[in-house]
Amino acid sequence: MKKQTKAIRTQTGKTKYREHSTPLFLTSSFTFESAEQGKALFEETEEGNIYSRFSNPSVQEFVDKVCMLEGLEDGVATATGMAAVFASMAALLKSGDHILACRALFGSAHQIIAQILPKWGITHTYLDATATEEEWEAAVQPNTRMIYLETPSNPGLDLVDLAMIGRIAKKHSIIFNVDNCFASPALQTPADFGADLVLHSATKFMDGQGRVLGGVVVGKKEYIKDLRFFCRQTGPSMSPFNAWVLSKSLETLSLRMEKHSSNALALAAALDKHPDVKAVKYPFLESHPQHTLAKQQMKAGGAVVTIELEGGFERVAAFMDALEIASLSSNLGDTRTIVTNPNTTTHAKLKPEEKAALGITEGLIRISVGLEDVEDLIEDFTNAVEVSVKSDILE
Ligand SMILES: *Cc1c(COP(=O)(O)O)cnc(C)c1O
Image (cartoon, rainbow, N blue to C red; front, side, top):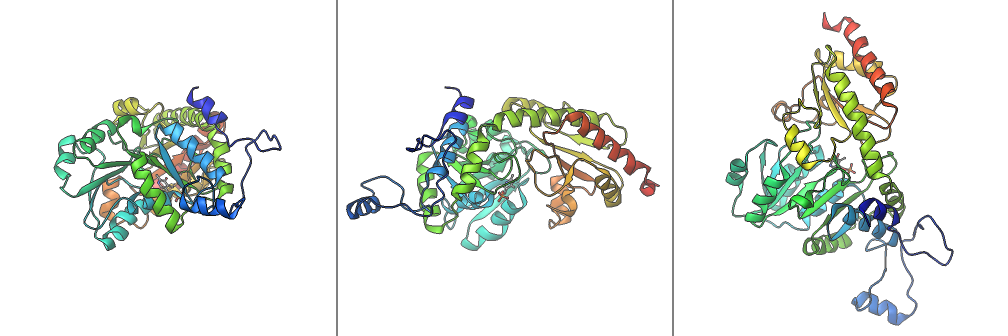
């Protein structure tokens, strides 16, 4: 069976009620049929559910689907994307280890690497997304245990060459860990390029409708064994309810990502032509500096487009406040188009030099293109650009 069929047909076994939609196991614990069974389950001579911090059928169904979509063996689901990021590091790294990471990271991932892990003696080196193979090679230290990156990055939409990093990780036996949130497995499968672990904020495109928080890490069995131990003991488990919502959402993930991508490409192309938009960045626009790489490792460009407007925050505010359809929110990955000014919201806490390194300017706008009719979106954005030019800010 092909992936899309499996995404729909992978399901917890039917109960005696013969339900069609997958059942929701909203239970904190499971009963033992006998004292003997309880003993066997705890001794692990029998496999089965004990307590939903450890395992739950609804959560397992979600994990099984993500493993299938990413082409990786095993996984654990977590309460949020950040719990997935932290668990993937805390479970596999020890004091004295070093992480090599791409500088363009989700804000909280940067805080974990730069502020939290150093408390336990785990150090890091950052490289630019566009660093060469020689530069990555040169940054590998004898104690480098993990390479961590996001591609495309947030909000810069820079790409990292997954095949290149896969070669380096393999050569030096380093764990290759990818946050695949922006592309989703519908558009990019990092395991094909040698990633050992792939993680997601399921809050974004996996849910895709802005309802629940969730995270997931999938990867090679040997690593997931340590992650499972870490998560069972420390408790960042996913709620069965959220898992049920997310598992249903995965049935439509590839359809949604195709439409997000075609809407995003059409909107990016329209804004690219507009004389009052200073710059547009989108991986599948030919003007993207890594367009060739994008075509090599992604099936389509994804939902996120960035544009740059001249004129500082006042111009940005005039533009954002003139939008009639798009929502102003710091989230992304929704059926509804969302607009964010990273400089004053998601990335406001970064130092000026950190912002500069990530291409975060005052006039940068991140658009998470939704599933509305694209003609309406083009009209809404074009109109807002024009309103913001007519306001006397630029004079
Ligand atoms: C949102 C996001 C996260 C964090 O996920 P939460 O579910 O909010 O904890 C991590 N990485 C990327 C790329 C994200 O967009």
